[in-house]
Image (cartoon, rainbow, N blue to C red; front, side, top):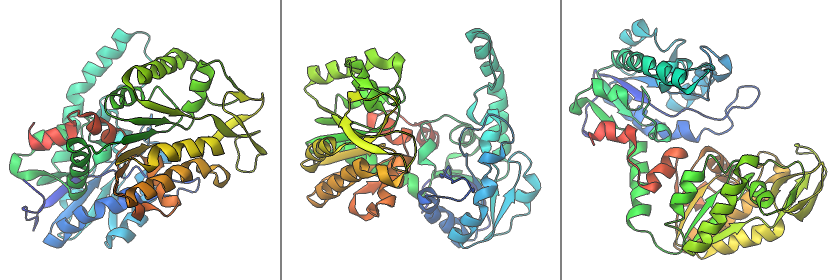
Length: 416
């Protein structure tokens, strides 16, 4: 079933969206890309004369509830964007009455699904042994199904429009689909677009293919890096992971972020790139600061010779040139993760150099795919969203799809 061929008149639809949006200290949204991305699906259902029950996670809460991650903070913003006053259910498991009372054209937002451990199916707390943890996880499995069944009971049909969590087999992204027949579950417009964008890259890689991986940790990107190594011509590794690579090669990195237990892994990645003939681009210089602050004193120095008491917060001018060189002639580009602490205005130059090079390559016919919350926030901050081919709302999901993995959230709808 496709969303276009389904008539939602008189139906209650429960929609999994990805409203895990970044908030500032006042609880205000700093980037609403994900909310805007879900609007076509929500508006289609309301225009048909259906009602919407919107569900999402936010952050990684460790308890129920943790108000720092409450979706109550975004109700007004969602109402404003949707053009309908959105009601709020302060407990996603106690929304039976609110859901039952919904009239055609009305909207209800459920509280953060991850306030319940059942959503992810991951037990919380400390465990003395792996066996204890495994036993707790097994005990949670039937509860996860009950959780999904309860959410399903609110609605007549299910729409998954949360590409950002499509790679997770969570209650609301995959298991809930079991409680709807094939004619009453479907992908939303955003999901359909995301799947098509990934297909564009995978089925027709135009070379050179340049991938840019940023972020603070090598460990969170290792699977992706190793897979991309078999696909790309150029691989740029930037952001905080720069300093793990610098230290691994015997460099001095001062107070810079570093994964000391991943130094061997960094060396192995360098070796793999050589063996596979991949042009691996790492930072050679960086902008350092004497504090983690926008107002800190700064200087430029080699990425492998940072003085004590200083830390690398952005790519330096020589590195920016090397990045641009590896991007400008590319015909397929994937960007996930910034080159520096772009949230601070004084440390945006590295990420901006990447964005500008991608925009130039796109203008010259490249297909550019930007994914992951921080990269999207970057491109929006620089006002360059209209100068790239496609902006994905998914980070991990996009990268796993690029790897060619089957995403549970999509398989549950398509019956794969």
